[in-house]
Length: 344
Ligand SMILES: [Zn+2]
Image (tube, rainbow, N blue to C red; front, top):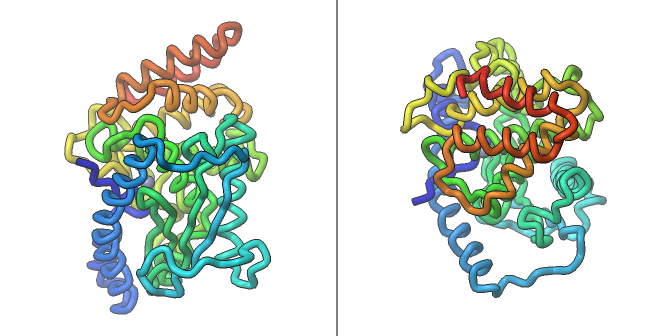
């Protein structure tokens, strides 16, 4: 049973904002409407994922030979009907949201191809489909099992979700996870699922800016927080470098032993996020050059492992670091330090 919302904003954050009387009625309504729409999308996600994976198993899905996937943007024009109307030339669109969704999605495909040698989400060139202007003031973005969906945000709590390049990288990575480990969306596997999206989303953000691990902000969602959220002192959705940071809208546990089986994956991703960030910072340089390569290999070499737990994934990354960098023991030492920091 898969229950993946695979959205960037956890439901309880939207519910908390909806119930916060310090925000006006209009903002609270936008937050509560967004929480409700997410439930509908979650049900749709299970169906589209099932259809896509069925096609793959039957070998009926066409496999293009091109190494660059087709990137398509649809405009929902503030309705909730997916996918919306196809935009014919998104690269030349006067609509900044459409243009941005096209450019960042194309850039994520380039990141996966150049850095990891991967051809799109399924490594077989599957088209990348995004729908923008979804709903009215919709405060979320998600991967629904076969495509990306972006809301405009209410402009106060959250801005246009395409403004976050880490958001785009996060959502598309849910697609990569679906075609590799195919992790469930609960327990340890759920936390790993969310964490992989944060790790590769953050790496994509750093890669785009050409940043070293010291220059990186290690924040998720810093570019989509609106003025009302900032006035309250929030700076991001999640912090990978300090998951328990009070400035994060969704504060997370930092130790593996603090996780509970029924925890929302957006919270149980705290320890593996901190392990990855710590490993990168200890090693230095650029996140995607060594530690990122280890995470990618660990993620893609095991095949489908829907109920993979965090101790097993940690062990896999240690083995991988040793195999990939036999003459650079600092890589294994950094990976080991990362997991030890969170008690694994
Ligand atoms: Zn997610």
